[in-house]
Image (cartoon, rainbow, N blue to C red; front, top):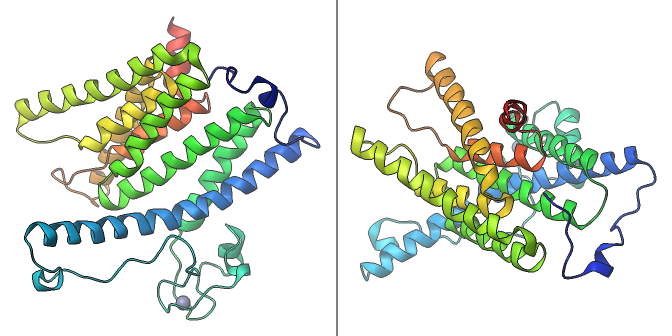
Length: 302
Ligand SMILES: [Zn+2]
């Protein structure tokens, strides 16, 4: 991403955090990443519950019935904040020392302190991935405003990936604001990039839309969801049209390898849909970190 200039030049010339040493900055970002990874786990669990709750209400409203009379749950989902984290098995409220990312999982040896049930390895794995991604970001960037924006982008991509893995869904509530924020950022913070990024949003959406319809007409099946188009548009709005081909290539290769691996180890059959969003998000994240192997390869070819 180019340097942020424009709106707040005086403000932006002052770094947010003065690093004691570069190593301290990297470790600090890794710790921030681990905590945000933990928060991403919570969001990925709650967001689809809230969406389903809202859909139940919408369906009931449309049919002019109550959710209960349609056999749909009327229970409000838990709020975003104010509810202490609990063990999913025994519902015991977790103490602060059981909420420290990665370390509490290791200390508890992957089991609930209270009931002894296994805790999913996904929680520390996600925290670890976020910690590594944030550390990689810190290694490439000095502590300044652009890091904050790139970190936010990585965080949103992580949340979207987790929701898509669980639910085969990329919520419009996340993808569309992400795209518009990208255009907003281009307009007011990096006006020099505006053209590339507006074109990026258009081409991102339309290219996958086109692939989707060609595939549907040719095979009679739907190869991806509309959320994938919107995520690609959002990435185009943040990273410019130049980033789209490397992202799409990486997503296709990584997604295919993953899909074939699942079929080989017989956890999926050929007809079972595989979410594409996490692979687009992975491509986007690697692009932000300037670590997309496809981009590096294309640069060698050029
Ligand atoms: Zn428990």
